[in-house]
Structure formats: C-alpha cells, structure tokens
Length: 224
Image 1 (tube, rainbow, N blue to C red):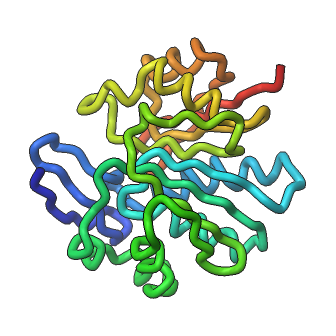
Image 2 (cartoon, rainbow, N blue to C red):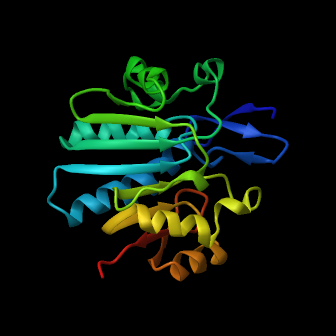
C-alpha cells in the first residue's frame, strides 16, 4: 500500500495512506495527539491513581514508534520503570523511519528514537535504565495475555477503514489482558466503540479529545 508523508499541525510528521484516506496520526498534530491521548490521559492519569514505580503497557499498533518514544521520555522524566509491549503486524521500513522528525520536534535524542526501531522483534530489550521494550509482529486477534498490563494504548487504524479491529471480540481480549484497575485509552469516541467496550465489561468515560477532535474514550477494568 502506498504511503505518503504529511506535516501535521504541530510540525511533526505522520504517514498518510491515500488508498484509505487515513493517517497514522491526526493531521492537527501527531505529537499533540499522542501526548494528549496516551501520555496525559493514559499514563499520567494511571500514575496519579497508583503509587507504584513500575508499570506495564501494551500498545495496539506500534506504527511509527511515537507513542513508545514519548513513553520512554516520560519514564526518564518521572523516574518510573516501564515494561512496554508494542504489537504491529506491518512494521514500517527503515527508509520511512528516517523521514520521521519526532526527536527534532521534541528536542530529544535521535539515537534513542532509532533504537526503538532497531531493537529486535519478539524479545525484550532494555533501552535505558527505565524502559524495556518488546515488539511483537502479530495481529491483534492473536493477543492472548491474561492480566499482564496496567495500561493499553489502543491506537489501531480507525473503525471506518478497519472495523474488524474495533469489535467486542477484540475488546474482550483487551479486557482479559488488563490487570484489575487497568485502563485502556483510545483517540476514538464512536458510539459503537463505546458500546463494545461497555459490553465486554469496561467502565467507559468520554473525555475531551486532542486538538481537532471533540472527544476520546478512557475505559477502566474495575476489580470484581
């Protein structure tokens, strides 16, 4: 599938798929969206509710590595240990990685960003004293973890182009994969997505969305 590169509203790059008219990130700002949805509303929210200094995160759609990179920066800043697992069926290429300008925009280490992508698949790699990364090349339907994660970043392509990724079946896998009191955050606020999350057992709340989007969802797995 053809891929193009777009400069989003905050100056950061995203990948555009013209065949689907779909982007990896919001055209209003790739970094702004990721920070709002996954870091502020996901990781920082969870940390505000828990005193633990270690957190396990599952990302659904590793993609450009932006969410992982922002999370690794947060691990260093907040001095928390993060075990991060990224699921991706179709990794981007080395040439595509070179066109991503996230370290420049964030005034962060390009070497550290490239390390995310150069780390081997299918094994855990320590990338700095506070960040462990495991990248798994498989489809979302193959996930079978049981109470393994405190946070899920659900960052799949939109339901308009891949509705099979936003079903009760997939969200039930997410529910099982989360520890009690774990949370799932996603940029989507579609009614069908909210209802699917509720059906499998999540407590769901609508929250203000990132730039250019009115709402997003955060779902919590309450202890039984």
